[in-house]
Image (tube, rainbow, N blue to C red; front, side):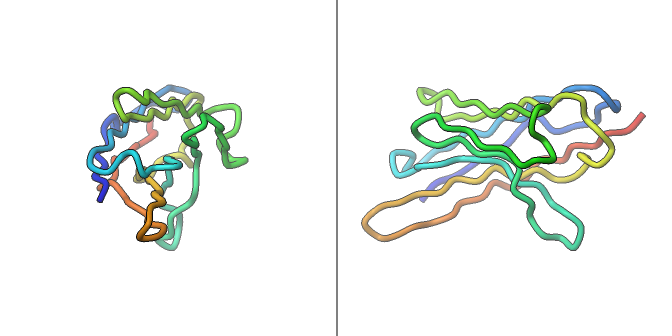
Length: 119
């Protein structure tokens, strides 16, 4: 089991920046990728960015060049630095961790943190 706790959400002006954090606890050695998703229209979750245990990063086209994902392995923490924020970035952001162990593959989610981009 992995527990994820996000922080950093809040209100930010258009064009501004915000940094989201996610800390993992529990069976963190089983994690092979962590990332961020956000709530999209229709209440679906849209993939935003991910970072693998090897440090490889990937981004959705909609955030590429504006968002940066990073990790602190010693602290079992990832961060999402968001820049040039737009109204369309306003939504709930969720931290995700994927694990792989002898029992199989599992997805874990945090409770979410809300980002509001507004003047």
